[in-house]
Length: 207
Image (tube, rainbow, N blue to C red; front, side, top):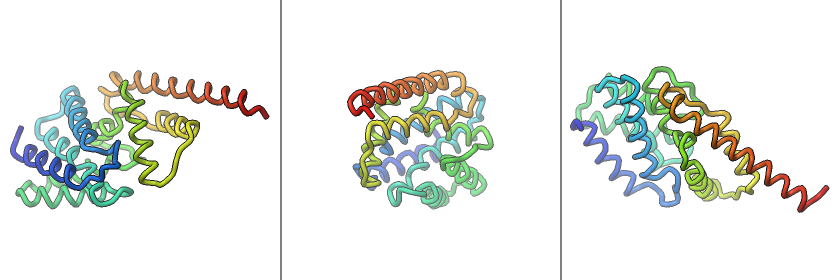
């Protein structure tokens, strides 16, 4: 691991462990680490150069750092934190500009441009193409109920997840091949759950 990437990892881990609210059950340190590791996996299978991989992984480390200050629109703060830190370690400004652009690709909705934007976009929501989607969805539900001060019925939450799985697609060739089949499986599971729940409700509360 090169010095800039290692310094970034140390800085962001210290920042998140010290300032990230404990009620962020989904957007926690584990999520950031997972995004970094998933992006590395995708990059390794996408013929991405070492230089581009370095910038990509630095962006992944910083992509949710703004959550230490605000929730909505945190990507804009993440860009500022990244630029300030990287400038402080004399990282080249042209590369900093690229990293800022990569971070902003995690804003949703967003159509990524180049391969680096595609990879970070895929890595950020890669759970939709993994078998742990259920657990991650539960963590997000707990987080949103606290952050937005509301509760979700089971039917509401199933519907939110169905729309999420339908509306978001993978962009990198690797994820399309390796993760999209699991996304489609998760979608069918949630559709069936919603269908079954509505059937139960119809029997319990007939019109």
